Amino acid sequence: MSKHAGQHITSDCYLQSFLVTKPPAECTQNKNFESGVYISDPDLKGPWKMKGTKNSIFKETNFYTLKSSTTLDKLCVEKFLGVLETQYGRAIKNFSRNGKFLDEDIQAICNFVGAMFLRARVFQSSFQDSINQTVGFIKDFMGDTSSFCDYVKGYEDSSKKILLSNNAGKIIKEFGVHFLINRTNIPFITCDQPVIRDDGCVDGIKSLVGHEYCEKGFTKADKKPFFYMALTPMLAFVSSEMIMKNYKFFPYIEIFDENIPLRFFNLLQRQAKEHLISDRPMPLGSIEGEYRRHASWKTNEVNFIEICTEENRFCIDIERFEKSGNILKILAKNKQDFLCLRESNILKNVVIQFQGEGLRRKESEIVFGDFNGISDGILMLKDKLNFRQSLQG
Image (cartoon, rainbow, N blue to C red; front, side, top):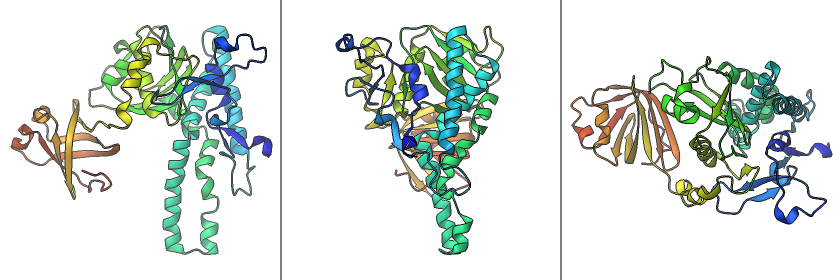
């Protein structure tokens, strides 16, 4: 088992598509030079450094090895991921040779994207933490007895076992599959959490794939799951019901606007935990210094409220908020910002981001009818359930 102990968190097969195409000047005369990828910290504070794809920074010991299975091979997850990686690698090679994917390639890519989302360290730890909390409640009820141990047997491997299903890939495919062909000078980069999963809205989809590819019939308030993963520096996968399915050259969308890969870079920069990954140093060229200087979003969080009505969506900066049971009082930075809600009473969706923590609520209600508070930059919301107490106003 020792030869399988060092397991890739960021798949080696995936990293191969971001290998350095041109060796550094200092390595051109080195006959033993082995290509790798360039990495940098998410804040871009340090230089881009080249690392081999088998470097320990991409691995963790026995990360997917089952701890307590008696019926399953303890390496079954690692082996299953190996099958998905082989199928994915074959699909990428087919595209390199033919300029398009076969039908079976598309399903293989969806399966791989789903697995890359589920195998990420953040998902694995957060999912397992929720399972552990549930087991704790069961233990409180049953006691630390043999019956309890039998009942929760194998729970500590729950987050790993979920990888043995292809359901995530099947779900992603149902949302629609599209490939962005990058025709700009700014490459797609990736990171140690390469799959972006977000609630897509009309304005966001337009900015990421182009307004002409946005499906008609959605309002600004509508949200649908959106998935993105860079496959190579010049090719990316996207999935959303908000992207139309009857455009010319479907499912391939050519990207000529350099702002689009820059927007995806911005999203990945926020998502990356330890490192960004590129096939070249300084992938953003001369503007990279600007991104480095403005990478203060991690230490200086923007506080805002996103509000969706029946027909519209508003994102408003907030100064502070106070909560009491199911009433939330919110103060806008600009006193006029809440005036946009004068005609609304029931809000479809409310998302608050404050000091790095988030809160979501549906069907919230503005609790006063004269709107005098709104004109003073104060919004009061009423919710059927108490607002989460973990948020600090």
